[in-house]
Image (tube, rainbow, N blue to C red; front, side):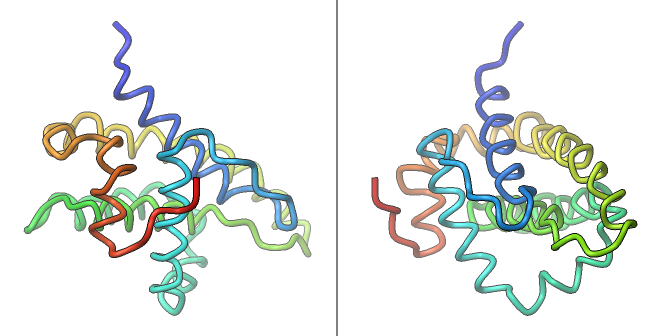
Length: 163
């Protein structure tokens, strides 16, 4: 049976993670949904607020999925539990690990295949977190529509993007 919430979540996550994983210098594709536009806007704020911390994790690129799984456990499972800010931080963290650097070595070119694979694995991991483990919290807080309309944006003190 098709789960519309899971499908919507997977599309949202894939939109953001593919946006992050695009080749350097490639123009950003338009967001696929209004929620995707909000997520990109909020993620930019999260990245800016953590610009000195997130680059430290770049050396762990070979273990992206495991690192995001550990971060999900810390952010979502430990007290006080999920919040829109924690959801945004987790997705932003996952995206930051997928960012490609300009290719200068043969080894970096070989590692590009792992970016696509890890993008799919991270969507699956985050879908499991948001659509199974923390689904009740997301649904009680309006799901992704709430994130678009106020929850995610309001919880971080950000203004809605134009449009």
